[in-house]
Length: 284
Length: 282
Image (tube, rainbow over all chains, first blue to last red; front, side, top):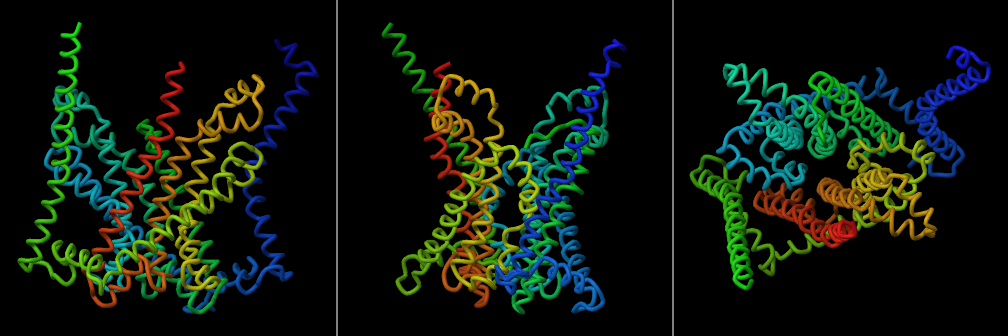
């Protein structure tokens, strides 16, 4: 055994294998960097050399400079980017927080009570096909140009997905689990905290992750239609009125990066943690 | 023998009757709460508990809808619907034409997939509506901008599903068919297309739904004259909430039809047939 392992041919092949694995690992890191930066580089060159209209497609370096200036004291207003990002984030956090409460309550009513199911299910399936943003003009009439309008759009965009997943999670809990808990003498509160909550939580977080994806899309559009002063959607739409193309592209980049972070990194981690803790894999 | 047959037929008839009765009951169970909600809404508004100018009663919304179709002076609704449908379907069609070959290529070519997927994963969570300002500046208000934005909304779900569908095909299947001497186009039409079809169909469904949902926002931001989104947003300026709700109801109904009936029929016509056939074969 040791003979074979320490023979020169074997170590050579093992080393080759290891370096290949190492290279694979490096490539996994390097590939996204290259595949995203090469198009940007071509864009930069094409714009600088005049192959494409450099007013409509300013080079990425100019876009980053514009973002940098807007994020500093020279921006109009000073530190504008931070205000815009903060406004969007505040709206999404409040809206999603409300959706979490509303969605969980309605989802539990649907899954656990007969009357809740009878009342809410048809109403939800009647309202759900309405594109979220179609509500914006109505909300504008009710609330005016105000944070409440954009927050309500986020609430609507997120809650259906959360309701759906809470119901799915509770339906997956078989009746037997309840019977077992009951027969072992668990009280109602114990059943709730020890059986229902751990059973539903993974589904709830999956619903949250998908819902936040929808909410981010809806929020940006709603901010274009209904924000008065701050928010990333407002920023790019306002920049279009003044033909600040570099700010528009910069805003789009920020929206993409923040969306990716919200959906995949923050909630992806959370989802992975709950799956690890409770071991329920949600099939979606 | 005949007795048994008759009995069987009898049993089947009663089973069918029971089935349709059950379906009727389910239908009633579904419709009743919706009607209940509409009734409560109507009564609440009529009783003055809610401002009728903000939330018009359903009867008035329905009346406005009829007026907008049949009254010759205000008969603009069909034009709005027509423009919206044209934009959504055109954007979806372009998305399919672009995404389907690209998806097959990325699904089959591992190197290409590895290099291009980082770009896709950045573009995928980006809201299509965020591109609107760019298109507004380059293309101006109108159909070109709206269709471009909806195209971006529709193309990624179709592309993503196609890639997933093609990548999920086990290579053995292709090897087996190839080793039996099938030409390349036969591998494509007899293996790749049928095997990836269910996933691709899901992508189509999602793509059209995204196109439709993006359309509303794009029309509000960029339409000049017609379209349901434009209609809703323009009605806001006159505080014409009845027209706004007509638009919302229509958007929901058309979206529902797209998702459930249109693709339901296509699915039955292709997937069920092919897969039922496969099952029969063994």
